[in-house]
Length: 592
Image 1 (cartoon, one colour):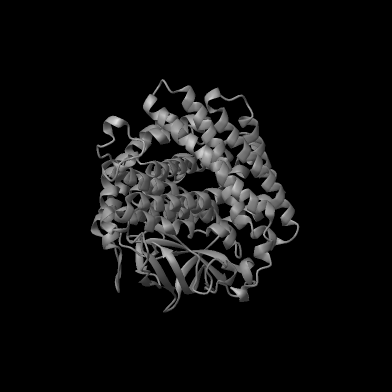
Image 2 (tube, rainbow, N blue to C red):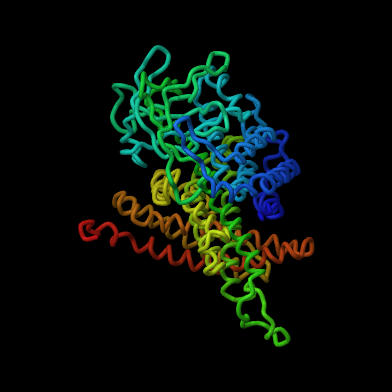
């Protein structure tokens, strides 16, 4: 049974990253830490009482393809009805079109609860939120008036349509055609791997589709973005005839079985009617608005599943009796004890818990930067915060999901042989989380984005500013009982500084040299930034220990473990980065 970590979320939001900075900012007049707590309490009820109970059912039943459309498990349809009735689709959407206008940092915290309780369900509203953001920022007034209120109310859902059979991550190879016809276009082609591209939650789905207008330039410079509704929409918002788009199949996947991954065929007849978003040939630029929002959301899925796997493993470890722990005291040495007392089980549980807490801290810190970059009244502060948020997006997406895979794998290991048996439930979290390191850009793609666009393009300015802030904070006098751990965090950040200088050096040698060490650099970035925030958490916990001894003692335990182990991870990755990627660059593919 899932229990929403409300105390942990409150600690990160209010103490660790200080969401009080958002109070009173233009556009966030109603926000306060107390408001955030009330929202999270209601979200926890929905996650625990509605989403978690149907998670296993959804894994077993899955989405079903039929000639008449994809059919979702009835329990999922009912959950979506309750999701809409509770106003959850409106949480982060603009107030101008009926949303509640909550900041990204609160939306990220809430989404963690959906991801932990039922990842397959969570993916549908996640993509709809991305569509709302894209239309709001790039659409015409008419498009906003027609689509946004219904998307925000949850009456319709939305998707991102990028991938084609011959064009996976290489969007420059897209072949979907868009033929002008009056004030619209007719689209012809096929898209694959479209999450929630077809379902029966709502009467309409709004697809955001990348395609080429006839005569457009080759490559990424010739891509445009279109709104393509599954059902055509009248001027008054009423639904008309089905559009010429059809789900021809859904994929049979390792996990997230109740999230339909669709193959969509456009234009089998006269052509699917689509409406240009923004200017021609700027579609990839607009799609990145959706992709960046989705990358943050996918990153949180990594630690959301890590949290769920940890809770599941801990419950099992507290009940399973096996062997006699080596450290048992004499009076209980001959008494069987649960495996949670075994040293290796404690090691794995500490790893799971500390990785979850560190990833959560990095993600919510990054989300807060995006809010400051959007709402702060001072232009310089906005620019600096936006640059930092943009820098952190690939780290959050890739590092947090890699941590999720590690934790879910450890969760299976804690169960021993029983973890390999589906009935215990540990395997589902491992299967479900595995996709998070892949979709919305693999770990390698995120790493290339980090070293290329985020570090190389500005000469390391944004990363340098973050490193300087981390070093300045960590060099302040620390409480005596955490000085050793704080030194480990300081050493980790100093290694990140050295590695960043090497990345900039390798950038001058050519892209293949920096890409060869991009993933190790991203991973050490995640560990180092996580260590900084965990050192801050340790100091705060030490100072508040008398307020809640149980919670803060647990915090001291996990921060100590993370800081001691993170430094070793950073050292290993930093050695790879500074050593260069010669062994990779010079490798001959014919010899593999």
